[in-house]
Length: 383
Image (tube, rainbow, N blue to C red; front, side, top):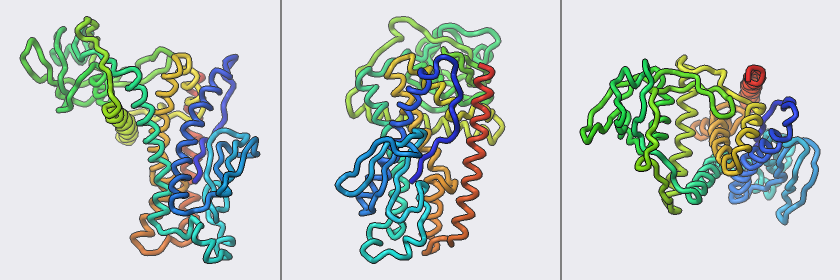
C-alpha cells in the first residue's frame, strides 16, 4: 500500500529548520502507523511483505528481519509504503508477469491471490491504524493532564452580535444545543463554529429556569495566536472566568479512551461537515491545505510545546486516515471500492477497467495536490 504526500517545501525564511523538523516528526509518526496497519494485517493473513519503507527514493539505512522484509529509511521523507509479494511498485500495482509465473506455494503468500475479504482487511488496516493512533494520543493527553474546561456560562455579549439578537444575558449557562449536551465552553464553541448561518436551538439555564433561545451564528474570520485566519461561526459571547466556572477533572484510563474516541470522532465530523459545506457553498475551498501548510502549522505548534505537537499529530492522523478512505482509485478507499465491486460480481474488474480507474484517481489526486499547494502559496504570501 502506498501513502504519499506530494509537493515541495518552500524556504520559510531563516526559520526553515523550525518548520521542517516538526513537520517531519509529525509526518513520520502518522506514516509509520498507517503503513504498520497494512503490514501487521498482511502478516496475519500470511502475505509476504517485501519492503516497509519510510520515505521514497534511494535508501539511506535499513535492515532485513527474519521474515525477509526490508525495513528502510529513504532519502525523500514525504510518505512511505509497504510493498507486498507480487507488487510491481510502491503503489501496489500488480506485476502481471510475476503473478502469472507463480507456483502454487508462492500464490499462498501473494497479496493478489488472497480472498477479497483478506485484501480488503489489509487495505482498511492503514486508515484504521491512523484512527487508533489518534485515540491513543488523545487518551494519553487526557490521562496526563486531565480534562481542563470552563463552563459554558456567558460573561459578556458583543453588541449587534448573534447572541444579542437571540436574547442572551450575562450569567446564562448553556446546557444543550440542538439537543446535544454541552458540558463546557469548548463544547459550545465546537458546535457553533460549524453552524454559521444556520439556526440553532440553544437551551440555557437562567437563574435555575430552563429556556430555549434561537440563534444564527455569524460567519467571522478569526485569527489564532499564530496569525492564521479561520472562518468560523460565532455567537459573540465571552466565557465566564469565575473560579467556580473553571475546573480540571482527573481522567482514568477507560474514560480517557472514551474521550479520545470522542475527540477523534469530532475531527472526522468537523472534516466531513467542512467538505459538505464546500459542495453546499457554505464553506470556502481556500481553507484546504497541503504539505506546505502542514509544515507551517507544525512549526508554529512546536513553539507551544511537545504536547501541542502530539495533538497536531493526532489530528493529522485522523485527517489522513479519513482522506485515504475516500473512494478514489489510487487511495485505500479506491481499492476498497474495487474489492466491493469484486465481492458483488464474484470476480474482479477487468485489468483495463482498473487501469482506467487508477489513471482517473491519479488525475484527481494530482489536481487536489496542485490546488492545495496553490492555496498554501497564497496563504504564505498573504500571512
